[in-house]
Image (cartoon, rainbow, N blue to C red; front, side, top):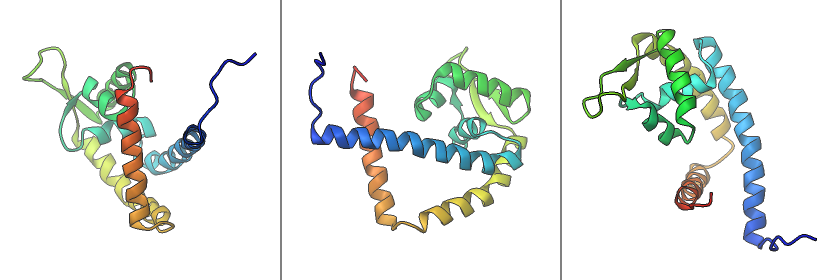
Length: 153
């Protein structure tokens, strides 16, 4: 006997969004692999480097910004530092939590990927209006905010 409550029409729509988001994530990861590989990066390494392009962040700060685990970011940051693509800096706000930033080699890898990333985003975005894409982003941001504030999520 199923005791689960019936889903509302909005719940059905959200379920469809969740399932399509899984598919979209897979498609973006495949595209990211093609963009990142020539620069010697993986999508995960690109994601971590991308989080610190504007300002150095702690591993925990990167994890929060990207919505991934601190342990995963720590492993990736350690590899990036080992390979000379990032560096740890002293953190004036916290003695043990070092800041991560791209090294010169990391910046070179990011610059190498930029043209391919622009070609990809321009090609894909040509299928939509800017307004459609901005509305999609707005809904995604609201979903993230709701999930972040939902203690049971």
